[in-house]
Image (tube, rainbow, N blue to C red; front, side):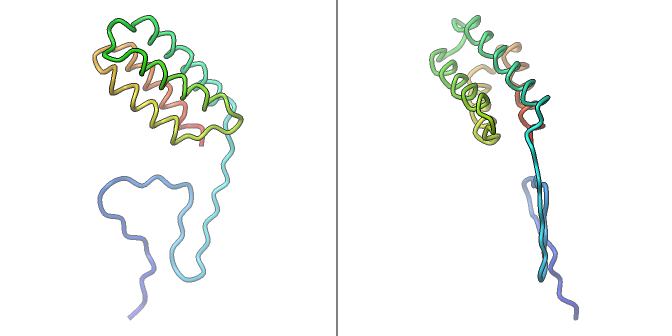
Length: 118
């Protein structure tokens, strides 16, 4: 019987740039920050911050939402931002502003731009 060195994934979602399985297998993933996507993410983040300030009275915890957005903005200002950190911070913002469509749309736009970075 032949050995199977495949990858079995059950449930959830896998997003990988490179995967390898089996004896002697190697996988290499080279990624670079896309200047266009990073610029879009930064611009979208600036817009999101403006919206959070403009709609602060409608947020349950405006100070926290703005502080979290500022953390995400600082991360995006780095030469090589941590995509996972930014996306998690954006999730926190979205969860606190569910009822405000313009903020939800801005969060989605930044998430898409950040997801395209790597």
